Length: 442
Image 1 (tube, rainbow, N blue to C red):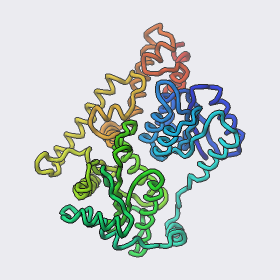
Image 2 (cartoon, rainbow, N blue to C red; image 1 turned 90 degrees about the horizontal axis):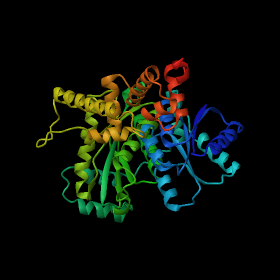
Image 3 (cartoon, one colour; image 1 turned 135 degrees about the vertical axis):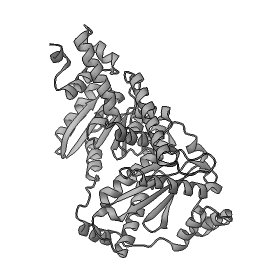
Image 4 (spheres, helix red, strand yellow; image 1 turned 180 degrees about the horizontal axis):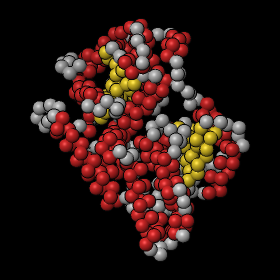
């Protein structure tokens, strides 16, 4: 069963769409409604949302901004955008960020339900039995082996000490129709952990699984990303992602966050469909294909951190502080001190700003110069709290104090602890304490 979140600043539209969905016969467990982006983010953080349906223009946070934040929290959430404006730029950006559809108001009921139906029916369930998995892979993947010469050239291009990189780029372009116009590049590497599936995997099955990983990567990236995916070593797939000047210059999208979304989506889908864990390493972004060897080395180094963090699977090179001159790994003591400092500073920032409307994980991460993904992991590991659960805990404790020790009205308390809507504040309060603010006051 599916959970759907509808977001629109017009309550009548929320109620109308919810009513349509309730009468649709779709396998829906719960429909949540929110009237601005900040309310929607609370639902995304606290509930298991499968599909987000959001208006694109909603006051202080647009649907595009909400979608970006949603994808940071849960990259696998499916999104349908609705808009009163048939603007190509908005539609293009929404699709680039992974929206499944872009619908124009006034909505046609059948068109809307058809779009939701299409998204939900394509949210495939994972294969549970491994023998069935291998049988399905053999049936669906006919092992059209990737061009070996192309694969060899791609790996030579990523080798650290390659001297004739220009000639390799030319050969790939002329003989294999692979363009490296760039000029901006990043590398994502995926290493499949065959020991995590709980059974022995034959060499033949290993090759089949690597091919499946390559297909999952291409399926996720083909529509909106200029990329090349290929085998790099046994059980490993490399992806070169490139941007031209125009797309890289688009400041409305944080490129590192996008790369992390890709990494987390790859990990999620590989585990979901194949039943195996994988480790994903993500490089910096550099300008010029002369740096592809350096980017490859960075992605490899990022994956090394899985040895220290067995319960984490997506690693961005920039999150780890290497030696300034030697680029040596820090010692365990240095790493622990660095991680403790990140969590300490994040906690301090949250304590100072938890009542700020619109506080986001992205903002806290930026203040600490780490990615949202790594900050979330470290915060949970060091404190036992999910980062946003901690924000809500501080907000609820302060609101309880104000209810018990002041004569402030509900809307005033909501305002003081960071909520725009008194109604939304009451919902969060009741979910947290089990009683409403008025019941606590009594």
